[in-house]
Image 1: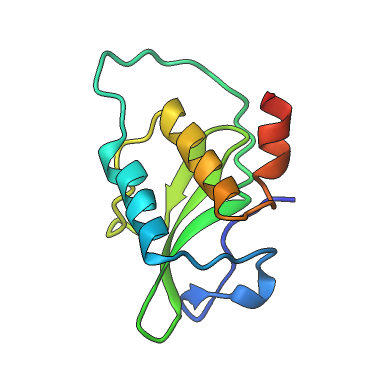
Image 2 (image 1 turned 180 degrees about the horizontal axis):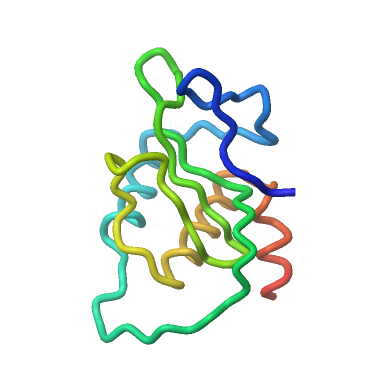
Length: 122
């Protein structure tokens, strides 16, 4: 069951997280490229998709002590996201960005919330 990123005293509570993968510097570069260099720049067409919003995944930003202080929640089932504060810039989102992020998470070894979504699309 999805939900929101668990927090405690203003930081991510990792004890209540299903799976955590730490990224290498190269993976951080790839993720940054997806977030800030990918976005739809043409005419927007609105459509409705299931609005379950049960995020099972997140990108967590940590301070120098390893405490998750900010995050971007992701729901790959309905292509919705939420940022933890207005200070978090998630870039421009589109369906293609969700596909790229889903593939990135899978390549990084994340199974929870990603594996079943990828399997369902094939």
